View 1 (cartoon, helix red, strand yellow):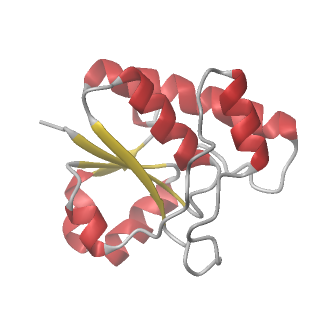
View 2 (cartoon, helix red, strand yellow):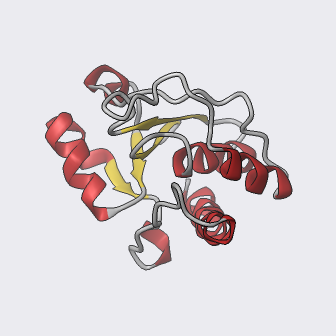
Length: 146
């Protein structure tokens, strides 16, 4: 079964930390973490979650203040049973980095009509709220399936 879930976005400072926290709250007996496809390239490794993501998560009962961005690697991907990405383009990016992970990589918004969850980075606070709502709805759907 899927006991270890990795949530992936681009920089691992906005969407994936929120997705990780939402799934952890819903699935306390699962091992859930997050990573970024381009955390290293963007100079974000070790950085905390975006302040807007932290605030919106807190308003929804989630604490992501201790989060630190990490780069997705082949070794990291191999440790997880399921990899959930935020956009269809991320499926290709993960597959390019870790071809053997393709079969266990799916959209975070899979059960919400295969929808992408847009990147709120450097956008309005309102966009972070919209994105959080999509992340939360998707996390609830995944929790029902897992």
